[in-house]
Amino acid sequence: MSARIDGLYQAAPLTQDLQVELVWLGYSKYAYMGSQTIGNLSATCASDGDRYSISAYVRNFTNRQYIGYLVQGDPTSLGESWTDPRTYGAMASVRF
Image (spheres, rainbow, N blue to C red):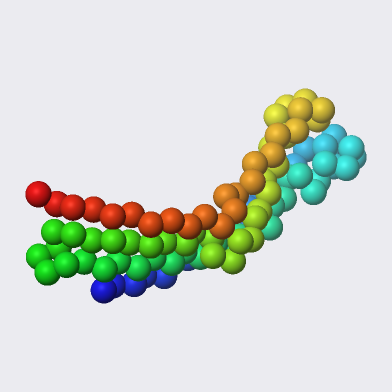
């Protein structure tokens, strides 16, 4: 049996060059994205010789979702992306 926990931390980056026109239009909040922390868990149980194994996992176990914005040239063109919500599952494998 083995278990693993890992995490990803991203410091708060500027996602866009701050252009004066965008700040005047109130778009400065879309140019700055806060820091992000996402954690994952997994556990695997394998038979002797590792022929059979079963694993379970949870990704983004805190279920925190973060949003990122993208302003592409024209201030009326605003895109956004979200991180994945909590996901979980299991995997089984047989080696031959």
